[in-house]
Structure formats: C-alpha cells, structure tokens
Amino acid sequence: MTRRLLIPAFFLTLHVQASEWLPTRLYDVTIETGMPHLEENLRYTTTHQRSCISLQDLATVFPMLNHPTLAGCTLRGASRKDDTVTLGLSCDDRHGTTGTAVWHIDKQRIRGRLDVKLGGKNMTFSQTVTAKVVGNCP
Image (tube, rainbow, N blue to C red):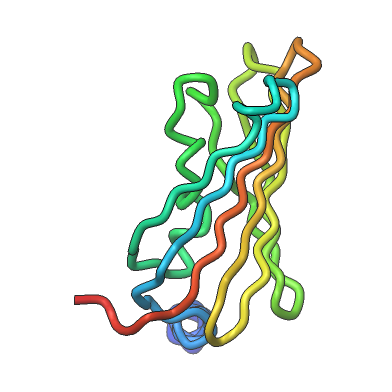
C-alpha cells in the first residue's frame, strides 16, 4: 500500500521540479539555420517569432524537424545536467541520419542547437534557437 502511494508522489515531484525549472513562458525567439554545403548567399537564414515554450517543447521547437528531409526523425532521450539538456535525434531505420540537440537554460533565456548529419550523404546542417523571456503566455 505504501509503495502505491509513493510512486505517484515521486513522479508528481519530478513534474513540479521540471515546471519550476523551466516554466511555460512567452519568448522572443530567433532561429538561425546554417547549411555549410550551400553557396555563400544561401548558407544561413534567420527568422524571428514569439512562442510559448515549456520544458516539454524542447524536443519539438526546432522548425527543421518539420522539414520533409527529417520525416521519421524525432528528438528523444532527454538527459539533464545542471542547466543543460541534451537530446538525441532518433530516425527510423531507413534514414541513417544522426544528430544531437543541446539546450542551455537560465532564468531569462534558453539557447538550443540542433546538429544533424544526413544519412548516406556528407551533408550537415545546424539550427540554433535563442529565446528570451518576454512575459507570461496568454
């Protein structure tokens, strides 16, 4: 009986700690994409947006993950050490694509970088998301 009560309490504590560590907030987001294999004028793009981001969103916030090139790939296996969260890019077997995302988090800013090597090709690219807190989510 005691075990049944302690296990849910343990997971509730983890969830509360995570939401306190990175609560859902409204961020001014800058996204920079670098593709070194392209011509000089096409190598880098930068976009801006406002988004609500929480700890759970760190695995999906990189827009490149929605590109058809990465169909069948997701970020998972999050590990946290101090103020850094690392996720591995996991793709279905036919893909051969590999990658890692690393997030650095503080109270007023989060910064993540996704590095990807496309399977079967010698092509790499990266996407960096820098987000500064601007307030609470509507």
